[in-house]
Image (tube, rainbow, N blue to C red):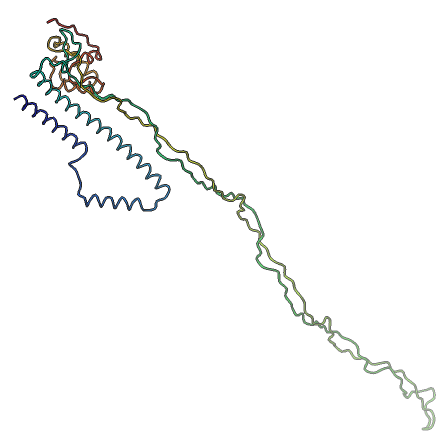
Length: 355
């Protein structure tokens, strides 16, 4: 009968532990193989595509954030697994305690050592010991940033050729003018003319007078066109034509500057297990040295420390036990009973009652 009861308890504990592990590892939410294969193909394509430096930095940061999330989720799962292990050990311990009391009450290995008369001991679970450490992780690796320093300009003036110098040949016609001049028509000469003297002619044989007369030259006024300047070819040289304009003159050309970007780090804290959880005997209070006043002190302390023990009624009910277990687990105290270690932490003094 006892062995059947023991087997059932162990079987129930194993079932609770397996269900808890399955929930933690998400064993009940598997996806079909074809969907997983499609996701792998999409992820492979996304990785194989070329990306720029900015996209690769952003992708690296996203991966770092995802790693941190997975790491924190893994730590939570490990803590939950330890809690399931603890509950399984407590369940198996209760079964072992029941069988050991019935089978062999004198077995010293199942009893607390160095016990004193009038003291009560309980088999309790000591939670694993953790140590919070700080670790510096690299968020972004060192890189180089290229900066372009723009060119510097200033306003200046310059002459721009609009029309080139040229040579032109021009024909200049001859120039004439009209003048008037006297032209000799008949030169001066002498002629004989009959004249009259003092003695008139008496007969045909005597008395004829002949006078030699000087006849002046005879002129005629005529118009005449004379050449003033002959026809010629004149060479005309036209100078080049320039225009003054304003423009931007480069003073300093653009420069490329490589600026080193140091790596970025982030300090994270995580809990590292330094000791495994185990079962042990610790001195506890029982019906001989506990009363409603002690329970009310425990309830008040739990409520003050933001653990909900339910009503302050001095009854060690289910809600008070649940709040007490949470308190003991958070403070690293033994779980499973109201030990003197817990009372000392709460600074609650009780007087042992004599049997």
